Image (cartoon, rainbow, N blue to C red):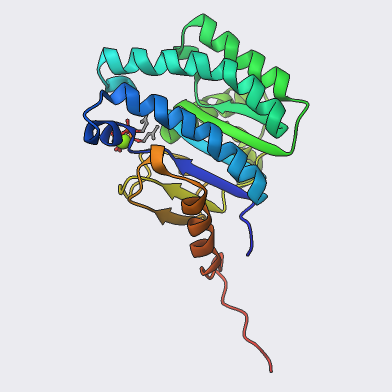
Length: 238
Ligand code: IPE
Ligand code: IPE
Ligand code: MG
């Protein structure tokens, strides 16, 4: 079985999972967070090199104050816990998205985790927090325009690689497989540039229940795909 080098996951369905159990949405997020810890280990054991997860979108601020506060609390705890997880899995952690909207202390925790985990490279783990693809592209275009204004870049010299280099994911390979849990089949503003040639896998399993077996199933499906990148399938000459 070919293991995808980079797997991206839209962690969806925490709220519905909790509701089915008669519990508040925040409980679903707590369980979803526990599951994320497990799935990092699973990804590493399977030989996945890059794992990128969508944990909070630029649109998720529209949720109730209670839910947003619950998520912020969870992220604070998680950043601390993730120091241990990163050591266990020898995993480098990066946060993609715009952290400047978060409270100072959370921004600080993110920085500490990124700094600490720099030493590891067995698994590269990206957490998308206050991330939106359109916002990422907007920030990239602003930075690029500033460099043009300063004379550091010629408009004629802008290539696709130049643009990739201004995105939050600079230096990372594009995802090979995207998984979205919980039945929704849309991107919800996730990695629109980076997913141009990625294979998509959708499952009805809600994120807190997504386990190793489900992960393997997604990879098996991925193995049945015929990736072409615009070319044609190679014919056998026998
Ligand atoms: C995903 O679960 C986690 C976040 C977006 C933070 P949801 O909270 O979207 O759960 P559903 O989709 O409402 O069930
Ligand atoms: C996408 O899920 C964002 C994250 C998983 C963080 P949402 O649940 O917010 O997306 P929509 O609203 O269903 O499109
Ligand atoms: Mg959702």
